[in-house]
Amino acid sequence: MMNKMQFWMKMRDSFWFLPTVYSLLALVVVTITNTIDTFLVPVITDNVPATFFLSKSTASSMYGSLITSMLTMTTISFSTIMVVLTTYTTQFSPRTLQDFMKSRITQHVLGVFSFGFVFTLINLFLLGSSSKKEFLGPFFTVLVAIISLGFFILFIHHSSRFLQVNSLIGKIRGDASALIANTFREKEYKEAVEWDEQEIAKWEDKEPYVIKAKQSGYLQGIEIKSLLTYARNHDVLFAAVFRTGDYIQKGAPLFYYWEKNETEEETDVEAATDYVLVGNERTDVQDIEFSIQKLVEIAVRAISPGINDPHTAVNCINRIGSLMAELASVHRPVRYYADQDDELRFMMEPKKFRDYLYKGFYQIRLYGKQDLTVMDAMLEGLYKIAIVHHGYIKEETWEFAKYIIESTDTDEMHEIDYDRFYETCKKMADECGKELPLERVTGGRAAI
View (cartoon, rainbow, N blue to C red):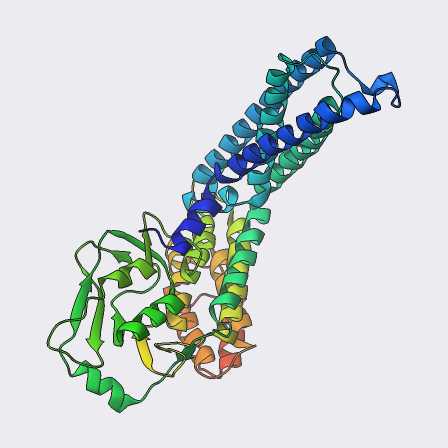
């Protein structure tokens, strides 16, 4: 059974949904215009200049030309789409294909072309059985052709911007920022970082029942509100074995659950799996880590020997650092979820801030540790997180900064390079009030 979230995601990422809607709309518009023509033309023939009426042969010729034009623009558009997708796969990251495919501009352009083609083709078909002069049909067809031309120009501009890596990075950053805000906004249900320890211990001491996964794949999202309602209706407490973005194996435990009012027979709550979306790939609907991973992959490819573009990597690192700062300002390690009666109904292990830090920077550190520009940019990004946050956020940021500093091979650095790196590290250590694991040297190089 496909849940609402899964249905929405399939519609969002498909190239056929909006063109289908536009094609059906074209059928409606053709029906309306031909019906009006049938009753209107005999009434207004003597009151409207002959210029606005087309003969059957003229209308047929115009329709044929416009159909050819529509097919040509559609073909060019699909060719452009393939170029964009190929570029994304080879130069950026296969995961970024989703961003172009779910673009509303791309889907609406294909929809407008589908509308124009279907509208013109049906008008041409109906023209064969018509003996009257054409009035509204040709007029709307010309109007649709002009609108389609405008959308074609818009699509070319849109595609060219999408091929610019800075535009792509900016879009991913914007989408990730919106996802962070949405994830930690106020919900209709109750979220809590802590709960009554005695109540938790009471349940965990009991033997739980198990709900197993019905399919393998990545956990793309979970409808928590619906799951809480389901748990309330069946008076059970669920505990998730997963976190968003994890790979789930078919037959492995998906939920543990306890019955709040124990009976002799086990409560059948297998339908709880309907509120969990499992798919073949990760998505950015609820997965903040995956949104950050796209930027990480672009950065890693940029510093690879085949591309060798550290400035693009630095751009990605700056955006990742900015996202981490945003995340730190709203992040709460929510573990417990309650229904409207404040009854605990669902538990799920949260992702800690240091988990996001690690996933955001560790691969870049691994593949870019020989590039001072990349390492320096990561420390700058961590410094900007530290200057706007305090408490455990600053402490975890410093621990990760020390991890990067200690991973950097300073033995082979020139004195000028070392001095620059030292200044960045010193700035970070001073902000966090920590002792720097490096020494300033003059006339030589030093190791950690």
